[in-house]
Length: 462
Ligand SMILES: *Cc1c(COP(=O)(O)O)cnc(C)c1O
Image (tube, rainbow, N blue to C red; front, side, top):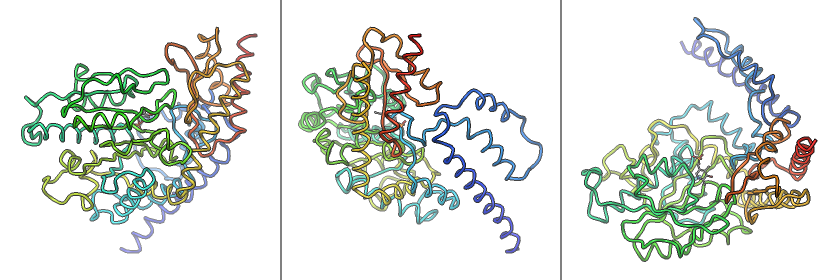
């Protein structure tokens, strides 16, 4: 019997070895290939459009098919010239940790199902609170990304604000509940609107606050805040990278008894580097914060953090046990996030932070910001106007008089395979948007991308 089991697992060992070989070949070929898949690779996707096989086959054949025709149809986000979506690549230690964790097959439900999964989430949570210098007793939920992080934090906020108004939403639900007012930056990321809708807020419940020309909320434009207000501020505008004056917003909100939530999907990392920390001053006074691992920390997907100063409020809305049971340190992961069965994503976060250390994180943030400034200066030299103050890792650029062509330029650079970035519209102007978020990106990548932009312009002129 034991012998049989052993031989079954031998297939897994073999699969792991084959997969590592495929992975290695993929990464070796990455710098030389197109960032976006080419036409041949897209045509080959046809090979996957088959009927469900009637019977089993050799796992090696499955992996071979996947590597042969799947790899070329990927977008090379793991290489250095992907500048879209503010997402990075994957750090070596995080990649390796994911492979190990895949072999482990852990379900991080509680410490009964995965002692190591729970332990590494606890350690990584402590490290994140240390890096961001947030209250050490705050809860940290490892979620699939900032969207789910917002669901955790905003549900906790709703619960806490209603409780303060004398309404126990756990027993009474929302019908007839006191009305809450959501006060959000006019530049709020669209995913928050989805989350608010899931939580029962309609568009009429949201008051949008005017922003300045960089996309920062104007604190003077805040409406009157009360104990029923839920303020959503932003650290890292997806176009400009600008960070709301969170300290000032928190000061006003605290006096009124309002809740402040900070969407820091990528911008919260400004707090982890000495050169950018001043941009986000005062953020630590907020009630909840979300950020991603899969963006600037360069962990694999899906990975985000829901951080809340009030663990009991999170537990009240996320726990699958009675709220009077263990809270705080002893709360099981399943009681602090939406998912019940969940992957061991804390393993990758732990590995990323362990391998970088405090200085490595600061250096990653700083290097991306420096490369964004290099982008800006190279583009300026090529005749572009830089539409944002390049304070973080974001650059928004356009060519005056040729704004309408920016979308075409982005598309032709993507088609050339040299780099990947998107068009945007910023304050009514069509532009291109470049986000530098990958640990792999170098000065050479930036210069090569600007050369590709110039080539696309020349081609369009001809
Ligand atoms: C990316 C992003 C989100 C959504 O994050 P996901 O990890 O994709 O769920 C929310 N807000 C901001 C500012 C973002 O940049």
